[in-house]
Amino acid sequence: LCLLVLGGLDSFAGAVHLIKQKRRRPLFASHYVSSLKSLQSNLIEGIEKEFDREVEHFQYRVTSRKNKHTRFPFKNQESSHRARSFMFLSYAAVAAATRGLSDIYICENGVLSLNVPISDARKGTRSTRHAHPLFLQYFNQFINALYGRTFSVQNPFQFWTKGREAKLLEKTGLYPLIKDTVTCWGYPNQTLQYPNSNHCGYCIPCIVRRVSVKAAGLAAYDDQYVVDVFNLNGDAKEKHTRNIEDLIYFCRSFMTLSNTELIYRYPELVMADIGTNNGSEDGISKAISVYRKFAKQVLAVADDRHDVPLPLASSHANLTSLHPSQN
Image (cartoon, rainbow, N blue to C red; front, side, top):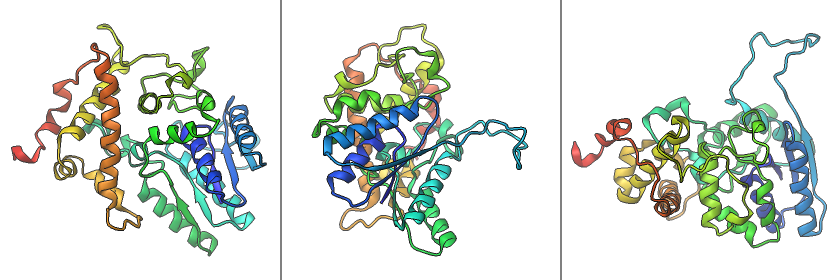
């Protein structure tokens, strides 16, 4: 088994989850930037100490930095992170093929793996799909054809909340290391300006992490967040309020609408059924259940703070008009 351990809470919990399952010969693969290399090593050392066993861990780095002497120079520099999951999984595939392994795991909680757009402004390519089941299925088909053998690319947390992952860590002695994991979308370029935190606090991954760790009762072991989106004042910057406003509106939908209404409003939920072996409960219902649990956690935190900004009606008018009872 080859598992991507990238320094986030999800992959850290994934490593613990797989070792607790007593999977043989786990190979942990990590891509690193900046200080993430030592952070990843510390997490692996924590796992080895907790379970009293050595694990094989290799780290690699790819950079888009221009090199005048390279044989194949880039004509244009790609500044986005759109292809990073493809790169991460490609290295994992090479490592797995070299070692004769067939299972490749990438760990991401159900909310951000499916990543249903929380507003119209985030539809299509405006939302990342780095662990989406359709992407994983296509990547699986690609490496099977490339290597002429069968791999199994999986996300064991497709139907887990991040809070459930945190509770998994609580059952071990590793939960104090939650603060050393990195979730922020802005790491490291944006977070370098923060001397005492690796988390901006206002990007979607930061909000999901903060709410989930709090729901697990482990907030005391979390990193601090530069911006407290649940306690903003009236002159807060738009970039600090936009995500939490959209997310609260989105979560209220999941707490008030039926499954049928949710699928009508958020058709991306249908994609949750790809590549799953569901038994009596289909992937769509499981995905909706995950989102409902998360929505309840978000609104519980928001209700504790009476000054949380309300969603802007104008930014969601087009979504409101899609309610099936109004058409």
